[in-house]
Length: 224
Image (cartoon, rainbow, N blue to C red; front, side, top):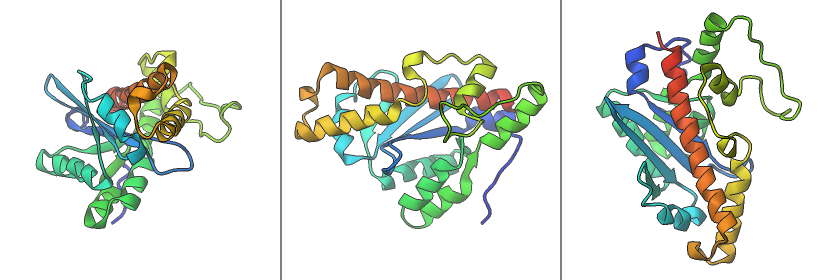
């Protein structure tokens, strides 16, 4: 089945969609997935920590009041497929990265389903930008030469979605790596981590929240 690459989305679909975002390091499979959606005025946010080495860090944050954080496996993520199908919600990510990782790592028909049904929001955002900001031209950032022009944080600035600097782009990988490495050295004892590394884990989680919540705000703005 060919991938859906819409350039428009209805406002009703955007409001009900599930917005997902992976975090991890460049050389490893993703470490965790955030998923955000709304039901009227009620907001929901879950972070599925897939990397087993980080499970102690997930359990340590289980009491965060604004989200659910849980150790997970790739098969756990089929809950999102079930939610999308039973409640007629779209699954949306910013690029094709999420659909590709899900298709690769989730076994069987569920993996194939993710590969065919996770909507890439980037064409929607590009089409909206051409309409709403025709004079704005994104140039490649020489400080981030491996990244494309259409980075999510640039769209956040267009819509006035404020992300504190501590939770901005390009830091999550080193924060996750530091947490993983110290947990390994401390035999999985989260309490034995230094305050600095604990703060890095908290910031990695919060960066993921901003990516999911901000993506929702962006797609809502792009909706017709």
